[in-house]
Length: 606
Image (cartoon, rainbow, N blue to C red; front, side, top):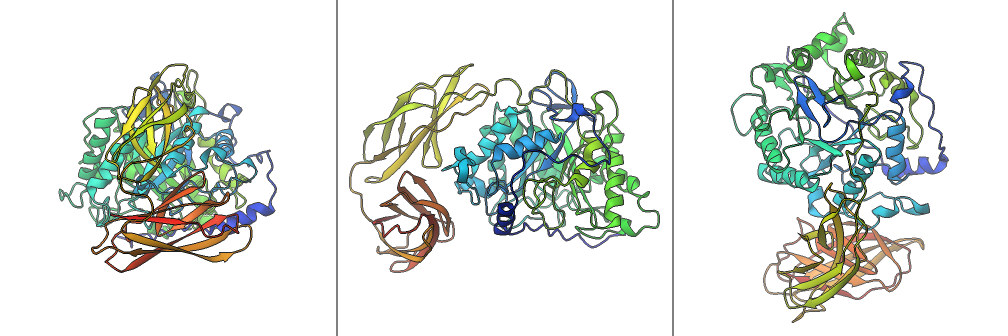
């Protein structure tokens, strides 16, 4: 019988509350002992995932050495929200977070994201106090993700990138929306595949999170058939990197029978996903308990004995019939009710590994690592430090053991040295030329990525680069990063600034005014109004200023920004770039410390 669709609240709790709680609880380096339920052997502590890229064979996943491997990890969310970064970094350093995952025996991290991160957005909610997250300062969201991926790989964890939402506002039933069409979805997936090409810490991409009604499986309608869309997207990703695993979730309803969003893979029995590269498909399901939503099977008189049949019908058959590997990409609960406790115990028993290396079983990532998941909570408690030993104890029996010969990041994980001596060697009205000294690397530098602000201007194999197509009389900031053959990326060089020749400087086509709305000494908020002084509607605008002191912008709304040294450049958001002649728009920001005075603003419109 068809049941009402589950309502997924999974609301993130307010970051300020979490940060306040963290401030009250001193950090303890010792990880709390795991609960007695389901103890794991010492070999599972700090277990490393298998070396290199992974591939599939029947229901098994194999590493680059053809050893069977199994994902046993956690979801660490945040990049998909308006914070544009994995949560909890307001409380602790990202490296210590990853180290703790590894120490607890988790070998894989699923990182949800939205397509917003491809727009150069700046992360919110990262603390740099007391030496925390120092190497993330000044980076945009994608570059923060780079650092998290690189460090996870360096300590032996694997990463699955999960397209969780089209934008940061909400998840979607279909893989596209009016604001984020299928073409953007596929282009962004290909961009991710290219970005991490050669970096074997990233083993694959989860194409879209939780397709649900009206998404269908095998119905043949290109606008709603998720199976066909997954084939289009999966093959596009494999055209860029044929070594990645492609994770395809289910839908909600097949032949009138419903399950959790993304949890119904019954249609794959007769309509399997067809990819151009063999050995790359992993099916993924989600499953939850009553803390998320009620389902008919929870009130069945035979519960929980009825649950294996429910799982078999929806996704377990794919593994049991040796069709393909199955990854339970999300499952979680607050464990507050007896029903939920019985559900998790039954599910863990269903997932229990067998065979050599304990790898002949289902793969999984628990939702979530974060404590601020409103309907499940997390492995961590609200202080972002202490382990919920009861939840972790349930999972102990199904964590993955280590593998002889398995390397966490797979081969070389050493980044090249930072490019030195970056200098401007020439400018014109539309170009800037740069040069720098060569970086060094243990396996050899293969290229350099040149960044204009937070946007990649290009890649070159030499130590010079000319950026073209620029606007006359405009200031630009540049940094360079070295890349080696394994995909390891160096820290950014010291930035340089260049101004193109010709008419420019000051303001052109718009005027910006500045007003401090509040100043409490250690920080302040300010509003900037942008007025179109031209005779036609603008397409875009940019406001630049230089702080008189050492102020740093901590967050901005209704505009994106980057700051290099004392210079801040703010650009319009998607919704306010168009300003009619004589009309105005505005944006605001927070910065620290206070007492900044009023900087001189320049405004340029196009």
